[in-house]
Image 1 (cartoon, rainbow, N blue to C red):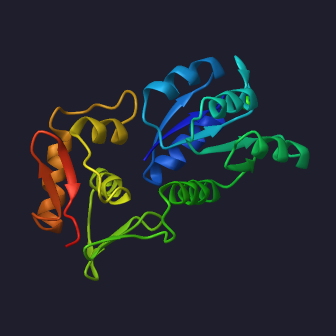
Image 2 (image 1 turned 90 degrees about the vertical axis):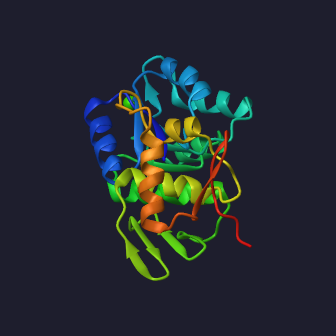
Length: 220
Ligand code: CA
């Protein structure tokens, strides 16, 4: 799950990025409001973590312009502005959630998971498909009750496919959702992880759609 963090405080930004990486998220980080808009238009982020007091513009204005463009990306405001009127203004400007600094990283991660769950329209925090259960909070996968040990990338890739059970995702789409800026990506990285998942979950759990991409085996 790839997130964009817009935060100008270096220490807070480093802490959030490191903490969320441990939770399995890929976090790209910009520190200036002007840098955020073009990035949001060109990259497939699942969610925006938005500070309000920023160089290059106000976070609230950025949020309003996102919503005016019809952008439905979930936005979680992270700010030191703790007045009730600030929270109300943030939520009414189109934020999906609002967290006041300082906050606990576990709570931040849990709120992100809740927003992503709501975005995908599923009621349960655990994903299930054909006997495979994936728990994003516990970082745990089981197949018919038996624990399956996955690498962090295999886990992230499986989650991407399980969030969209009927959808075919191309190699490029998977790649840009798995890897952040500056991460070394081998040209066959996605194939390698798919191969690893097939070895662990069975060859038919993920299907190759020739010339298009990958999808989960449909429920018959
Ligand atoms: Ca700030």
